[in-house]
Image 1 (spheres, helix red, strand yellow):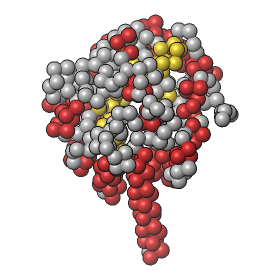
Image 2: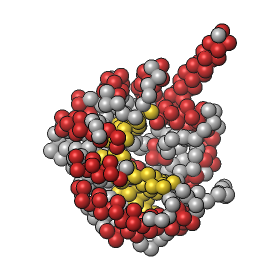
Image 3: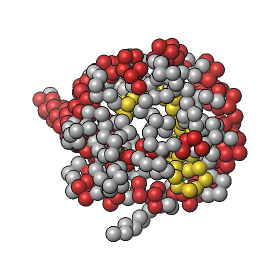
Image 4: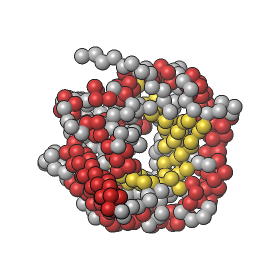
Length: 390
């Protein structure tokens, strides 16, 4: 059945891969240690002509569709590999290109943090550029997977950098943590450690596995719920202590339960308005699809020859904007589909059925949603009773 998409959805989130190499060799890395090897064809850094052309294409696209606010995120590899001079050159080109447009740019960078310096911090403060740090928990947890190219732990050096980043004045640019879930470790130890840095945001990510490459702890039983059980412990700790830190997977589920939009691509049915630009200017819809099969991210577009409107009209992009119509039959019939959204696209993959599957984390997500629903409903009922009693 052919589904007709009624509305064109312009991009408002642009993820720039300004470096295609990394100073770490994380065991679970979806770029360098997964099934896709096309990173080897990428130049190490995004060149000045590619930066300039990408910025031009962005402005044209946003002006054509009256997009007033744009999120531009620098990724890699490790985006700090080029140093502060390289970052200043990139941002100067972007600022020059968008001058007079009236478009509000929200600039951010995702890093492993090991190359952070006061010079970089000062520039980020000057330009109001935020930095997020990838960190899985305390050293004994983080060093399980996040190692250097010699297989050595990295947490001791990172803690030195975090002491700098989370102190005045650099605490103003600290955007939060991105943390990959490891169900073999104590979730409370993880959340307490992350919260000890007074972070405003935490993203807990499910490992980038699928039906062909089952997640750890789900290799035998796909209906087991180790990830829900792990996250539920953190949710209860976070929710009942009224923690100020935003945990985006929890916030997104609560927002969706209340009829609002999600904050993350992996939850909910909201149209995805994100596009990825590689260091050579080629374009990808979802870079994490590198975990599914060789070449899964290729769209055959680049910023030199194609504008963003052309890319946005491609079915590989628009299929992420179909809502429930893009999901398998089991998902369409599921009572929590409006909240779950079928789960993250890479998690649905199998070589047998492509992406026409529920998420490999289906049972976990459903259990987590139901737990959060019960907790929120219980808290609301309690508040209503207290109001009536008063």
